[in-house]
Image (cartoon, rainbow, N blue to C red):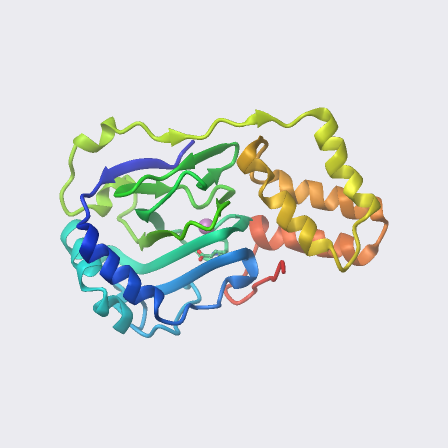
Length: 283
Ligand code: YCP
Ligand code: CO
């Protein structure tokens, strides 16, 4: 797995809670809501313009600006400023994930030059997981993770716990590692063992049952099947990207050309190619 812990921050509980309450009380951005099921809310803290409605990821020159919402979250903003190279930071967003998941995808398909994606875990729980290809892991409070966002990855919270992270994106000098996002490097961080989630194998019978969804798939339940299958790899040993091939095979078995097109376009947009404003909706 390429994603890894690069640091750990001590967060003041009361001040963090106060800021997160402020953030969650503001309207969430709906730009990428088509990529998720359940509650996956995005709140803009720093971006190209400082405007909270500027929420579609794109490339721009220079550092990002804190939004009015970012400025209101004064403790979180000071944690970011005191620990991270904000001169290299383009975007900072708070993500809330509850009782839902984002479909597996690759980030930066719409970029000429990818950014370096970092998560600071704020409130997490065992039911809240991330995946990268065949691996599933859980971020614990205060951990700073480098996320290999160009690999197929996903996230899920399979409970009502309101998992909250701060996602930051940096444009680092070519050739430097993700540790360069910090103002000051520290070796302490290298010693933290990540919490990996072990899963039962996916049996031949279970895989057969997945393919047999081809017997019942319709336009009406297509999205329910995507929702079901996009979470399988969090509790069975499968790859995050297997979903796309399962959906294409299920659609083929249904012999419905619309469903085949839909499953093919879904795979393409999530993991093959996507333009800046070319968003899909899986719901
Ligand atoms: C993001 N990128 O980074 C989105 C998630 C796919 C495209 C969905 O917020
Ligand atoms: Co992503």
